[in-house]
Every structure is written in structure tokens, then in C-alpha cells.
Amino acid sequence: MALCVEDGLGRHDLSCVSPKSKREDLPHVVILGGGFAGLYAARHLYKAPVRVTMVDRHNHHLFQPLLYQVATATLSPSEIAAPLRALLGRHDVSVVLAEVTGVDTVGKRVLLSDGELKYDFLVIATGATHSYFGNDAWAQHAPGLKSIEDAVEIRRRILVAFELAEREPDPEVRRALLNFIIIGAGPTGVELAGSLAEISRHSLPGDFRNIDPREARIILIEGIDRVLPVYPDDLSQKACRTLEKLGVEVRTGARVTHINEQGVFIGTEFIPARTVLWAAGVAASPVARSLGAQLDRAGRVLVTPELTVPGHDDVFVVGDLASLNDADGKPVPGLAPAAMQEGKHAAHNIRRQLQGKPMEAFSYWDRGSYAVIGRGHAVGIAFRRFKQSGFSAWMAWLLIHITFLIGFRSRLAVLLDWAYSYLTFGKSARIITGPSPRLDRLQPTHALTEGGETSAAPESRFQATASHAEPASPVTH
Ligand SMILES: Cc1cc2nc3c(=O)[nH]c(=O)nc-3n(C[C@H](O)[C@H](O)[C@H](O)COP(=O)(O)OP(=O)(O)OC[C@H]3O[C@@H](n4cnc5c(N)ncnc54)[C@H](O)[C@@H]3O)c2cc1C
Image (cartoon, rainbow, N blue to C red; front, side):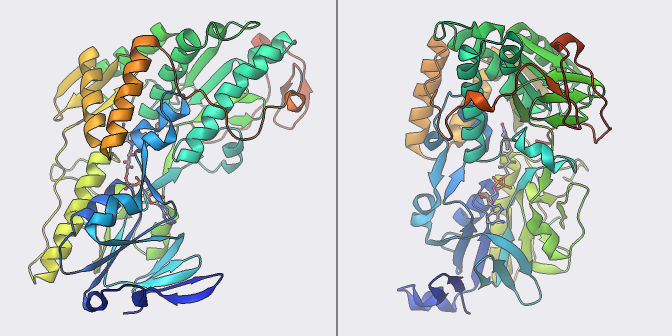
């Protein structure tokens, strides 16, 4: 079996690189993606009679559930990410840093941007990405939160907005700088809004001389009529009340129709804001399209109960990229525990195939899910039936996240940062990196209409005509 990668230095047969040549005779399992699903698949193939290669475009595994804490300056990137080589070295896995562009199921090849890999078994776990519902131009004005780079950029935008406001003489521009809009009130949007409210109300006052950060408006916009639509109605209402107590303006039933560098349109209403964050939609990784398999509306692969692509027992799709229903007919959610369990199950079914046994159907064990709404508050459901809210839910959330954080150092560091943040409201990672703030890039006092014309209306009267685009809809995790 050839394992070839091409780079600027030519074509390399990676099979020659391994010192253990007898490994070459073993079936080759290629895992695409080192997220929760890929990592669990790789770890559960340890000591199986296979050779495992993991491909990822990043060299690290990322604990996405805590990304919002990097974006809002509580944690540092290194506390929620760990190098794949370090995590998998002990499990005898080869790691390849590469971009996957497609899969050829007939030739049993993974196509990379700079080469290809042959496989005997393939586990596809490339996850999901942002969806702007066809309005991709919004991405530059309203970044989503999916990677370390996204989180650091969002942190930069938030902190720079306060810095620029401190130096801004024009009260209207200052107001726009201190307006923070989050689009989408799923768990990520709610977590970002709560955390931003805490920064402005508790962490930053005292740091600035010309502005009062407590005057910042945190506006959470949701297309449907409640926040956290994946939770029962009473938990949504509790979450909404907690957000409002924190000072977040919650706008439900409000459909964003346009976003530009000056702010957000909801129909004809314009809200000026220099910081707009997108938490409203996810779409499956494009790798799914190359399989020629049936996809659902979000582009996820409709897999068999055994987690394979129909007609291809050697190709598994797991994690956020897989679409399937549980035994009780409910869709398996796009959550980290589901991805871990699916990754583990794909490994289990590969082992069974190697033993000549029939594969087994996947069954999701739902232990619960939680969304945090600021310091000491969360809502959640444990084991599908026990509703929790307030401090006890927050404690449950904290325990779960510490348990699943990869690596002892991360756990300890995160715990210490949380304790510091909890006791002092301090945000220890308030570092601006990236391009330096430039006041001269800001346009003065005016709202832009969609066509780019300026209208000098004050904030309360900002009106503009806007064509209707897709509604903001909830994040699906
Ligand atoms: C901001 C945020 C907050 C979340 N909060 C929670 C939470 O509180 N609780 C919870 O349970 N779940 C949460 N989730 C969802 C959870 O993180 C996902 O369900 C889980 O990460 C899915 O795992 P996965 O392995 O399928 O995909 P991912 O973890 O997304 O991993 C995909 C991997 O594939 C790699 N990859 C993608 N495309 C390519 C390519 N073309 N070439 C090479 N490599 C590629 C990526 O680099 C990545 O390492 C959250 C998600 C986000 C974004």
C-alpha cells in the first residue's frame, strides 16, 4: 500500500519513513480530522492490527466548547488546544498535517491539496464550519467562532473596540464602537453575550478614563421567538431573564437582513455596531460533497446505523459531519459527547470487520448538555430528563468541561484561571494581538445604507432599505 504525499520538495512515499517495516502489511486506517470524533477513533484503535494515520489541517486538537472563553479573554489559546502528535504519540498513530480536498471511494484514496493517501478503512471526521445562509460577504464583518484563529480575532475586535472608544471624540462613533451585536441565540451566542456583558460591567470599568465600559450595549439577536431553542421553553425563559439581568438586550423574532462594516440591518431598522459576531449557523465540512453520498439540508452525510456511508462498509463518517437518528428516532445532536461516542464506535466496527464479525449499530448515550450564561449561571438537561438551572447547572457544566479537557496541564491551568476569574471578575487573557488599531479607518458618525451611501441619521432613527435574506437561525449544537 502506497502512502504518498507531495510537497514542494517532491513526492514522498511515507511508507518508507516508518522504521517498523512490518507495519506496512497491516490494513491502513486513515482518519480525517483530529477533533473529538477523530481523536476518539484513533485512540480506540490502539493495539488493533492496523496502521493508523491521522490527517488534519491543524497540528492541534481543539476543545471547541471553551472557545468563547478565549474570545472573551478568560482563557489563553494554549489552555484549550493540545498538539495532536503529543496526544497520539503513545497510541502509535502517524500524524499528517495537510488539507483534505476530497475522497475517491472507488480508488480508495484521500485527496490532499498536495498529494494523496491510500486507505483500507477511512474515518471521516472533518466536522462543520460556519454558514452565512448564502450571504458569505457577511463573514468579513461578522466572524464566527470555530477555530483558535477565530477566537483570537474576536478577542482582538472586542478589545480594540474599547480602545478606540476611549480615544474617540465623536459621541456617535463612540456609541457604535460600544455596541456589540451577537447574531444567533443558540448556546454559543448566549455564552458570548453573557461573557461580553461581564467584561463590560465587571472586568473593564476602572481600566479606562474617558469611557465607562458599563455603557456598552450587548445586543443578542435571534430569528425565532426564544433564546436557546434546543432547550425546553422554561429553560429558555430562565436563560433570557439571566441574560437581561446581566445587561444583555435580547431581541428575539428579529431577522437579520444585512450586515456591513457599520452595523446590522433588521429589515429597515439599522443598529450601528463596529463589533458583530456570528453564532447563527453551521454547515457540514465540504469534504462530504466529494463522497457522492446522500446529504441532509446542512450538507451532512446520511450514514447507516453502523456509521458507514451506504454501500461503503470501509468508509465511516462520524461527529458533526454525520447525520443519523438515535434508536428513539431523535437526531443525534452535534455535540462533543456524540462525536466522541461515534468515533469510538467507528473504531469498534473496524475491529469487528477485521475479526470477520458483523458491524453493530450505534446508540447514543445522552448524558446531558449545558449552556453557560455568565459567571455562576447555566441551564441544562441531564440524562434527557433532569432540568437544571442556576448555580447547580453551572457547577455541572464546570465539572463536565474540566473532565473532558484533554491533558492534565490544561485542566489545572483552566481551573486556576476560572477560579481567578470567578473570584475577581478579572479576565487574565486581555491581550490584543494582530493588526494594530487604526482610528483613521473609522468612518464618522454615519450609517451606511446597503448601497454604500451615507445617511446622517442618529442612532435612534437609523433607517435604511434592505433586501430580505435568509433569517438568522439558531446554532445547531
Ligand atoms: C464555539 C463552539 C462551542 C461549542 N460548545 C459545545 C458545548 O458546550 N458542548 C458540546 O458538547 N459541544 C459543543 N460544541 C460542539 C462540539 O465542539 C462539536 O460537536 C464537536 O467538536 C464535533 O467534533 P468533530 O470531531 O465532529 O469535529 P471538530 O471537533 O470540528 O473537528 C474537525 C477536525 O477536522 C479538521 N478539518 C476540517 N476540515 C479539514 C480539511 N479539509 N482538511 C484537514 N483537516 C480538516 C479540523 O481542523 C478539526 O481538527 C461547540 C462548538 C463550537 C464551534
